Structures are given as structure tokens and as C-alpha cells.
Image 1 (cartoon, each protein chain N blue to C red):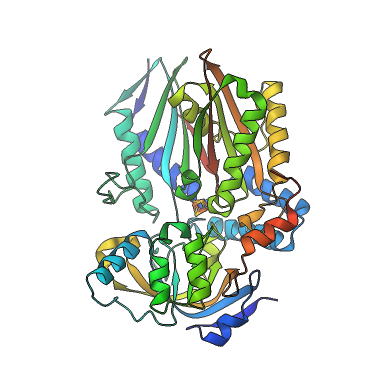
Image 2: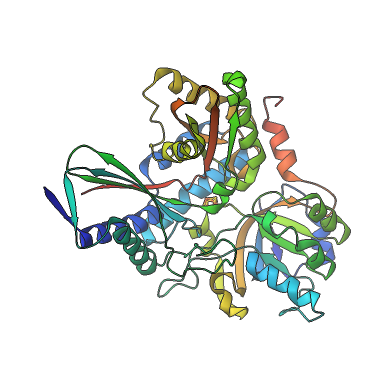
Length: 280
Length: 185
Ligand code: SF4
């Protein structure tokens, strides 16, 4: 059985937190360049150019691209044939977050209690989702998720009779209501099916896919493209100042559900779409 | 060409600004976000004075990242303004002239902007590393215990922003989107 050391996880997680916040992914950077070519609004173009410049400064100076350095969210695929030595996986991830945010001059944005709202001072606890898989590797997917876009996200139990039309109308409504607040251009993550809590997770999980990568199911892939076109006709544009680039991409994950239900969740992500992957 | 404006804001400058104007702001701004607004509201409820003279001033809604050694401030882009809506009309009545943030304001704030001759600017959300370069000095002046949410006095030079709500009732979030909308939903 393969052994993975606690400290190795801590160090990898710490550097993922910093990398995610300093280095905008190639996929997002490429999407900005593409949008600069197609954006119709001059103000929208200015905003996109500012985002490109900002990403360059963050990368070269090793500073966070956004002051909201997010909640650290992890999806961890654990191979059932590996063994973690020296402590628990969740303790290692949280220690990594503490180290990464502290040493990286990242902002601590987590309160320990939703009611008394006292900052925990080290950006822990992280949000950790575990999935068991075959093999002996651990794959850690990390995102730094900002509060602005998270606040404009939503979930609804539609009726099966609402169908595809109902699903689309609902998603467009959420994007429209979010307007400038979620820092467009957005990556729109959608979960369809599952059950109440699974659906919200699917929406989040969809955001871990790189921009431009389509769902392998051709029907869902077509829906992603259709929705993207319809969202970009809303006119919201970069930062909600008007324009043709409201979404950089739409991601959908769909799953089996109960005969009586049609859950749909929309998890909005801002342009500061920050991801890292590590395989141990 | 963006318009250069100097702070504190006077009536003439405020009145000349129109929704959609791109501006470069220089002068003193004060930072405050959720917790500082809550505390300012409590202070006023008790009949006490605010920790700074708000007359003619501009508040920037921001919670920066910690400064690295050698930096004046960490990354410092705008946060969502609507969370401050509940407190804003009162501050405008007391003489606050401008706010910098991102996102929609509610109808009460928009009305108070008109009634009190003020202006709401948006900065580009997520452009925090670039914006930080326009901040020349920073000093915590109140509520230090609030950490990133403390009130800071900042000197800014050519801080980039755009006028969203002007004192004449203009609303650029509506106007801009109307130009590019290609659907009726
Ligand atoms: S929504 Fe995203 S880009 Fe905007 S302030 Fe929050 S983290 Fe930054």
C-alpha cells in the first residue's frame, strides 16, 4: 500500500493556495484575450484590458490578483489503495491552508461562527469534499472562491414539468439578477439533478473544469454552448457596465435524480477563477 | 479620456459628473466595509461622533490583503457595495459625498445620492493588484481591532473608477446594459 506523508500534503496545499491567488490560469487568461477580440463595448474592452494587466502584475510581483483571496475549497479524490501517514487528511489540508495564506500574505476571510462572525485569523476551516476512487494516488483540486460571486449563487427545486425551458429561464434569471455584483465576466457553474445537497455540489464541481472544456455528454455540451450564447445576449458585459462578454464559459454537471424532482443549482464564479490541481 | 478629480469633493465637481464618466481620483479616501459600517451606525445611534470628519469625504469599500514587506498595501480592489446600503443614506445626510465600490445600490441609496448631491463610483472588481499601485499611503485611523475591516485613511493618485450613480439620477448599470442587450428577458 502506497504511503503519503502528512507533511507532503501540508506543503503542497500551502503552495496551491498561493499559486491559485498569484497566477491566473492559462485558460482564463486565454479567455480574456478572446473576449478582447469580440467585446463590442469600448468600456467593456477597457475593463478586460485592466484585468489582463492586473493578472500580469499579480503574476510577476507574486501578489494576489484579487483582495478577496477566497474560501479555500477542495475536492479530493482519494485512491482506496493509499495510506496517509502522520495525521488526518483534513488536518493536513487545514494546516496547508493556514501556512499558505499566512506565509503568502493572503487575506483571511473566514469567520468561525456565522452568527457571532469572529474571523478565525488563518482562513481555516477549508471546505473539503472527499471522493473515493480506484488506485493509490491522491488528487487534490483546489479553488479560492470569492464571496462576491458566491453571494449571487442560487438553488431551486424545479418541477420535472418545467423541463429544459424552465431550467434555462431560471439560470438566465440568476445571472441577470447578479448583474455587476458577481464581477462579470463570469464562469457559470450549473448542477442539474442529484438531490438537494448533491445538486449544489455538482454546480461547484463544474467550476473546477478548465474554461473551454465541454461536458462529455453531447446533449449537455450543447446546452452549455446555448446557455453561454443566451447569457451573452443579456448585455450585462464586463463588470456589468454593458457589453457582449457576460460569461467566459458555462459549465454543467448533470446526475440521476428522483422521479418527482428536478433540482437546479447555479454557482457563479467571477473572472478571478482560481484553480490548482496536485497529484500525490 | 478619463476626467481627473481631486478629493475632497466639492459641489461643483459632483454636479459635473455624469453616469458613465471614466475618472481618475486623487486625494484622501477612507476605507470601511461591513463591520466598520455597523460600528459607525452604533456610534451614531448612541449620539456619539464618527471617528473622522465625514463632510465632503469619499468612502472606499475595501478589505485589502496584508501588505508584503516593502509594500504600502496589499491587493485592494472594491467589495460589493449593496451590503453597505442599509447604512449609506444616513452617512450621506451627514455630508458623505462619494462612495467607491462595485455592484448595484438600492433605491434608497440612489435617492439619497440625489437628495444630498453625492456620487457613486465603481472600480473594477478583481483588479486589486493594479488598483493597489494607485494607493500611496495608508494609515489605520479607527477600529483597529477589526483587522482588515478597520477604517483606514488612504492617499490615492489617479485611482481608476467610473461614475455609476450621479446626483442627477443617472444610473450607468442600467444605461450601459440597455445599449448591449439583445434579448427581452
Ligand atoms: S467576486 Fe471575485 S473578482 Fe470580484 S471581488 Fe470577489 S473574488 Fe474578487
